[in-house]
Length: 213
Image (cartoon, rainbow, N blue to C red):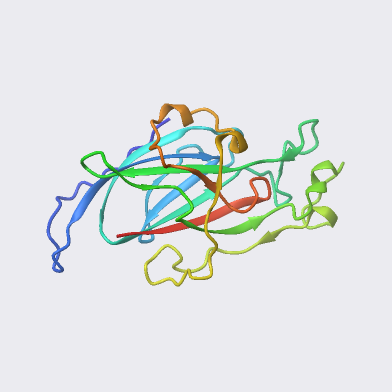
């Protein structure tokens, strides 16, 4: 499935002499994403995060005025705060995430790709002990199934936010992520990389940001 966002306003010079440009974005995420520009949503996964195995790429268009901050919210599917999926079945396991992104200008030239230049903060980590995956009756917050969760920092996806303490994105290979349906539908830029938090299995919600000059 593809979601298309296109601003309908006419591009015009601003009082500062800057002007809005039209950009095209391609994003693939396991399982869900939302992309923001200076705190405003410009595109998101059309398949809800509550859908198991929702693998698809999204392509959409947006307008923005440089410089701007890209804010990417990426979430892996989980049934609850244990961080597990298929709970109570023979397939009970920790899910694994991954996201890749590219943005092109009106001439079709790639100006942004996902890579180690991004800063990513994990705000939901679970389970804290991977042995939770093997529990017969995993209960969120108990024993090996403890979790760590926090709210999105206010204004994290705007230029005024100080992200100096945020770690750089972790970069993963295709073999490590195992991207599925939708990934191969996009001709990814040569230097675009799959990124995520520090652990593909335990990092469940990741906030990533990048300043685009």
